[in-house]
Every structure is written in C-alpha cells, then in structure tokens.
Image (tube, rainbow, N blue to C red; front, side, top):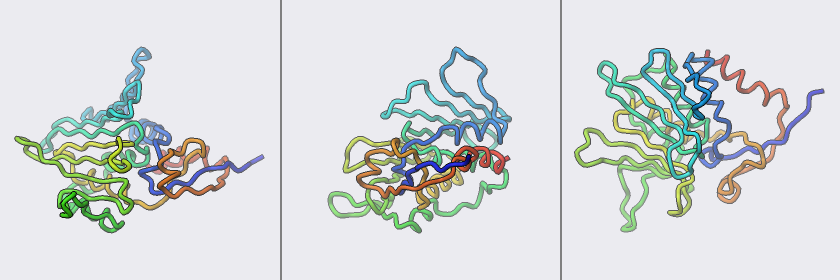
Length: 239
C-alpha cells in the first residue's frame, strides 16, 4: 500500500547539505550519455562526456575542507580549458544546475548579461568591509551566510569566482571555485541556483545543524512513490 514519508524542507538551499549525489551523476550517465570509468579498483566516480572534452570526478574520501567534486573541460576552439570544484557539503541540486546548463543543447552560451542579476533579484547585496565600504567585486546573501567573490590573481588573464557558505567567519560549510575561463552561462546558472528560494527536500536526520539554527526548516510528508521516482523523472526530463 502507498504510504507517506516524513521529510524536511530546507531553505535557503545553500544550507541544505549535500543531498543525493545521484542527482548529478546518474543524470549525466543515463540522460546525457556520459561514460563511467570501468575500474572496480578505483574507488571514485569518473564520468566523461561523449565528446571526451568534459570530465566529472569525485574523490574517494570527502574532506569538508577540500574540493570533492571536480568538473573539468578541455580547450576547444575559442574556449580555453576551465574547471569548477565544489566541496563535499555542497547541495547536489546546486551542482546539478551547472551540469544541466553544460549539457543542455538549448542553453545559449553567448550574450549573457550580468551574472549577479539572479542574486540581486533575490535580495543579495554587496558585502561591507570593516571600514564600512561595500565591495563591488562580491555579493552577500540577505542572511549573511553565503557570499560570492570575484578574485583577481596577479598575472592571471581573468578573475576567478569563489562561492562560500559559512557562519560569522567560521570555517566554511562548503566552498565552490570557478576559474576565470568558466563559461559565463555556467556562472549564471550557479548563481541562479543559489538565489532560488524553493526549499530542498532532505531526510530529517540529515539536515545540517546550521540549517536548523539559521535557516528555515519545516516538516512535510510526501508519498513514497514521489520520492522513489523523483530521480527517474529527472532523467526522463533531461533526456
């Protein structure tokens, strides 16, 4: 008999915790035909795009302080090689926004405007320094728990992006890094996912402490069938 399951609805989504990695990996493999490395002796996920230009890797042992997801794309035509990394606690749905934009042939890759626009529309603002002046190179969430910074490196041709979720200068809950050659439409897709106010569904016992204390967490019930087939519907939709 069908039955309902207790879930937690977590907002803002950057506090929701990692969720199910299959939301990214299974979708790439089954819907987008990314191949897997067939080596049972290698305890990591390696997915490669059909054109062999892009690769997604996860390391065997997630370290909260180090990148766990690494998405790389080789030099191709006018596009320089680029890479994006995410920490182990980054929500899978936010990572999926980047991989979905990368693999969707209908997504335009040129004529993108200000990547900060989705954040501004959601109430994000330029962070203030200790001297009271705002930083034009960054954006901070309304609750101050997430921020985006544009960082210029000496000698580098382009500036990179850093996304971080943390509480009052404590160690980051998770961090993402996008090098300066990351296509603008992928940067915008990531920022739009950060700004999305739709709560994420999590198992109640896997909601991070920071979400309980500083986020908005509510209880809900969904049918077991809805949960069981959510990934299948996602794969079908992407395919």
